Image 1 (cartoon, helix red, strand yellow):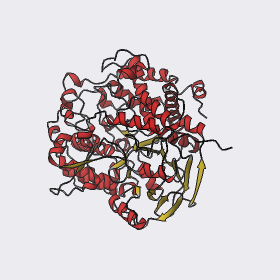
Image 2 (cartoon, rainbow, N blue to C red; image 1 turned 135 degrees about the vertical axis):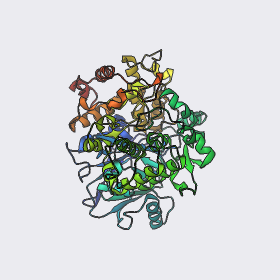
Image 3 (cartoon, one colour; image 1 turned 90 degrees about the vertical axis):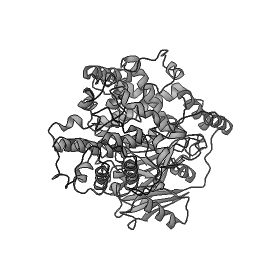
Image 4 (tube, rainbow, N blue to C red; image 1 turned 30 degrees about the vertical axis):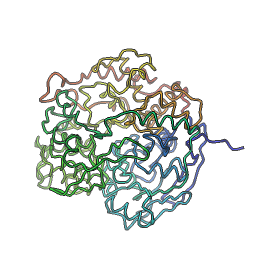
Length: 611
């Protein structure tokens, strides 16, 4: 007798081998779903189980996994997301990225919980999924096109404007190490070079259209949760990310300025989301079934034409292409955001690489002879935009920038490694760890590198959430002792659960409500304790993957710049203490059940039921 699946799951994994042009559908059971939930859990499991050690990230043996969560496609706030992962060509460790929009909804309706793409097509191709029908189609005529042209062409061929596609542009085709995958034109699976993996497989797009109806075990309870969450207010609805509050970031040392070197940036008043609303914003957009319309839409004609189809810059882009490059021209930043979307480039790594090159140019480590005459100077918006073009095409200096800051620093030398702002090869998110040591520790030990998404700000968790681990008083912001590290682990657990359920972090769910959502959707009699074990299992599995790829505790290290003060900072700009951070790293290992080298104890692995 077939086992009945829990609510929220289709029970089907679609496997696509581009080398053989064959597809297959595999079943998953309830035990697997409960052990790994979905999203990031499924991605981590399949990469651990199926990749051989030392697999070439840009070779046919790497696998690209797209995984939904049980909530994906349901009409509750923040449930339009999914996770994408592979071995990273940028870092060599595990890469995963979460993204919203409408693609996950269509895949769930088409009847699948995940897609595993393997092999490499002989010629440019795209995958078309319509309910149970799967086609691998010729994309030779689409190769070289930007994402908007590609989306329009695929919809025209399908005769259906409701088809949703994930896409790469020239950046992914040219295997820029930090190329992203665009889902539509406003949503990016940004980190780790997943677009380069897609390009290496000659896969231009995956287009999906489904007509099924995702079902929850307890529809009335899901409706109650929706009503509760809709009633909660969040500033993201008005501003998106990067609201007027970031105007005060320079004062407290939280804004990355000129490659994380400086503190003061008066132009912040010209580029935050409030200024955007007053000047170039024409509306706000959002994901499927979510009342938080957090996505800016900008449009203007001079001095550049910017297409509203690509949305508008979020905080990470405002900081990455803006303050971190010293650029205070909001229109130049918006144009850079549009170009990154059209070319499928991660704006965080793009900004980090350009800022690093600008500092190298300022120090004389790069000259106009290296840059084909371009003066890569901090504050020059036109130079920043020209650099984006060269990166996407891998032309001139762009070919070196396309490799990421870690490899750039290795090639340039002369001490440039000290200000290459990356961990494990991943450029840092634009959140300043010198003001929040736990953020720095999160960057150090993060399985994907310096990713702000799998991290925690000091005030992220509310008092009730802290009580779940017995903490009644919140430690000071600069505390980095065992209690604070316990809070970091709880924050990581909440983040990885959200990434596995595929719920958006902008929607104000508490970690206890995650358990409530799981119960309502799946029908399981579960609780927070079980989910925290699931989170620990996924985090530990990510660690084991990286160890298998040759990473060790020495790779859990911050760039030297974070241990130096900002050039123009005040009392809030003190550097991190290397000795203190190393001790915190050891404490984290201990609390996670890992040895002094950061290797999970065999007993911990067995206790977590890791195969």
